[in-house]
Structures are given as structure tokens and as C-alpha cells.
Length: 262
Image (tube, rainbow, N blue to C red; front, side, top):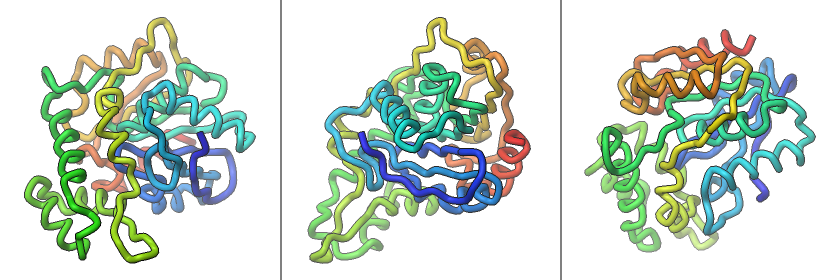
């Protein structure tokens, strides 16, 4: 599948994979900062941003999309940063294509499944609620972003998260709003998106950094054992933030990333 993208800077390739509801644009300021030293690619994953839409969405397909992206852009090896859903794509890609990844940074996501039962039910229900809320908005009859923001505020008090979601709000040639996200596909495939990355006997034997949002609840101590099994050279660092680490603590995030990539 063709993935829309932006590229910033020059140097060794650095690919940043965004999370659910995101796009490459969400990482533009970070990409511009890192573009002083690297050629930063900011692709939109399938059903997000300006990339093609598809009824099908799972990690095998999204990893294949990144394999095609490498081939299309003649990238033989790169650093990869992946946040949340993009982190799972990054891990799956590295495990399947170890020769193409020099170093890997995973931002606040584990290899495990985040299903509606068990310890991670709050995270699963949160995503289910977001999709339901976005689908419930009569977007064609909405007159302002403020109106939509107010509606989202009944469930999401954090302004930065609402603004992140509202970046998917677009206008057509008639001035009507529409969602850039393929919400129907996200709705249909949410369990695939929340699913685990199966690593079996595969390992990636190069440096891997897990950046954890201290207050997010996405990483449990037992997840570190799986990381060590799949990524023997794994280390981790914690930032005082929620799940959207790069938005909430941009300075600390960039400092840790730069130190690791050197």
C-alpha cells in the first residue's frame, strides 16, 4: 500500500511511526528538530492521515506497508521510532527485518495485547469510546471545531488529547467537515489494533530503547521480561507523562532520543 509521507533534513534515515488516530504531521516539530542530524521520514500509516484507506488492518499488513516504504525509498537501513500502534508496527518490522533497522525506539507500548478484559481493560475501553464518539458525531451537519471539541470534552478532559484528535478534522471543497481517519476500518479492526505482536523464537539483536510514560499505565513490570526475550539489547527509560509522551514532555523526550541514537 502507498503511504503518504513527509521528509525533513539530511543524513542517516530515521523513520517515525505514529500511533492510533495520529499521522506523520503530529511528529513534524520533533522531526524538524531531529532533521538537523538525520533524514526524518514521517509516513502516515494505512487508514490515517493522507495514506490510502483499506477495509483490512492488522500488524502483518502494516509491517508489509513499511517494507514497501523501505523498498520504494531505497532505504537499506534506518533508525525507527514508533509510538503506541506505530511502536507495535516498528517492533514487528524489526523482528522480521533485523538487517534493515540499526536502532529501535519504542514509545509507551508493549508486545502484549490490550484487550477489553483483564488489567488493560481501561485502555481498551478508552479506545473503543473514542471511536464510538467520533462515529456518533454528525460531521456533515457540524458547523465548527469548537462544537466538536465541546462534545469530546464530555469524555476527554485533556485539551492536548482533544487537539490531537481534532487534527484529523478536514474540510472538503464545499466547506463541510470530514474525518481524515478511516473510522469504519478502525471500528471494524480495533481488536486487531489492540492485539499482541507474536515474536515466538524471533529476536532483534541490536540496541532497543523503550520510553515509558510513568503515568500512562500501558507498561507493566512483567512486560519488561517479554522485551528482554525479543530484544536482548533492550534498555528502558521513564518520563513523567501519560501515554502521549512526545507531546506532554517534548524536551525530555528529545533529550533521551538524541542520547540513544548517537
